[in-house]
Figure 1 (cartoon, rainbow, N blue to C red):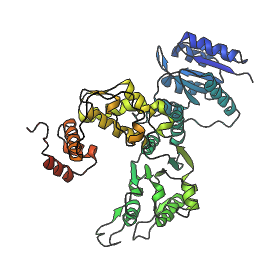
Figure 2: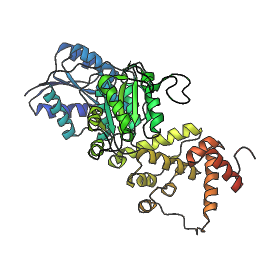
Figure 3: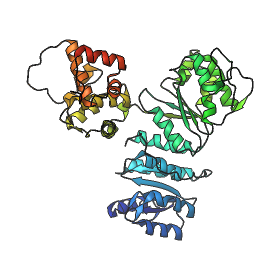
Figure 4: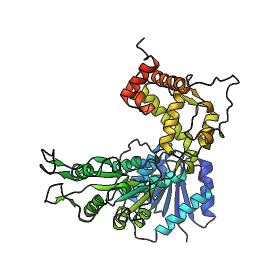
Length: 453
């Protein structure tokens, strides 16, 4: 099948390579090197496919995209970019792009994308979504797996279907849920609740609300999270841990879009979109009698599975840089640098705790690296036996005296206090202990608070 292709790309070498590639397949190809030329060609002639670069001499391809679709709504548009920006991919798909590919272009990937476009042209066209403004996101990556996740976010954001986000702990399920909400155009808030963190009796009231006198201490009526979410998004994290009695109530919400407060008899209509997340297999739990199978199907209308960090190691340097910047901004300190052997160590580790574990390791490393340069010897992994096999920089050839646990703990707490400038709240967050516990250890070890000498 011969199609008409327009290439809008300012790199002459890439433009010629793409032109020859598609002409060899028998397609009719035209090219332009900037927005003005590309828009003029699209206005003058109809094309089946437009390959649109993001960075052009006279502007951004994402800004040209809606104008091209307005002029030629039946044209398939594939965005090309050298930027590894997943927010940009979401914007492009939301704005109506058929697909989004990263440079440097791989012939197999590009051909698969074009074949998919050609296959889609034989189907009923889907309405394009309205463009949304860019919102800085926390989802970072250049891997194909994360690009596919960004496409799924864009495709499902504009509808009301229930979404199930699956993946190991620490992969960023709430980040994805928030991105879906940001790009949904919904007027209500994003409300998140952890189904495993609240006991069943309290969780029912939190979700559905209660009437005055419903139980001891209910001295006034209180709306639940579903009511407060209004026309927004209700995010139910750790959904697999939901108690059986609440599973039945949630099923009713999904089926009838109504709730009843605890102690109430009146049905209240709810319009919030429901996004759920779990690191467990709901259907396996259903087979074990721990989760309702009908609810599992209701929740899995759209499924987005997040890859573990070990399956997208190319993203680790980008993530590490972003997390170090985030920590430095929060602490008001210079951003530490990562040595090449530190990056190698991070990329070699399997990360059972995923992005959350990566952040914790980097916080500790930035504390240990007092000169602002993180090397492999500053990287301390939870699985010490694994970590010892991937350290690429030898320790200093100086004898290390064996010390007591108290001495090691005292030194580490002092380093954390130095790092936070004596801020006890942030120190507790890093150490994973309570404020009273920190105070006791400061007194026990006679530690000093920076700036209070």
